[in-house]
Length: 270
Image 1 (cartoon, rainbow, N blue to C red):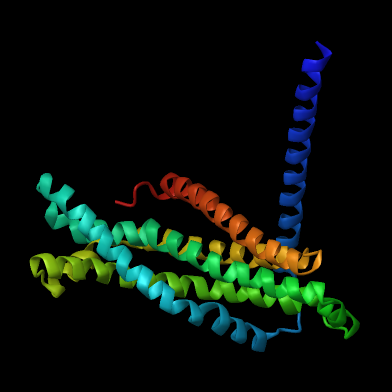
Image 2: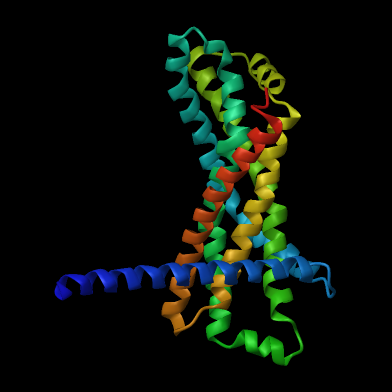
């Protein structure tokens, strides 16, 4: 009897320890992220660093996002057209593409791609500074490392992600038009007229609003993993990987919450 209880007890103890450590990690990340709202309004304002990170984190993501945006619209149009035609609703394709992209696919896909590139980059860069004691050197030089390293990167992510999302949204809608034009020689004016008429303020607002939260998550989690890096180069690689995984999971979870809140306050948006 005792031989059977020991594995159960040890497994229960292991599960409890893992759950406890996970909750502690969530608490630490939350406290780390909330510091941003206090530091962002406190001088000195490192606007030069913010502009630098806007270029590093944003503009260098444009080539990948351009390809993804166009292909996403093409695939969505090509896959949806046969089903809509089966029910005699092919004329609604532009509206369906616009609503799907603006409400959901555009913000989430953009955030996940940016998280894969940016959050890992922030984790690796800040982690390298941690293990090489450059963060300690900033403190010795009377420079607040949180304000200099974290606030500037998080602020840059919050600013750039809505712009990148709008860029991807337009390209995806344009990709849908390309699919329609190549397959059925559709009119450019008719297609985009239907797109504009199908979108309302309550379709655009949640999509733009959630990107601000996604940018905050990407910046905070990447910086947190970098600040807590240890064990040399191995720790830097682990910080970069953890930053991508945690940022992606939090983006998906937060998107689910925002969708429920959107339906609660705005209904279906129709």
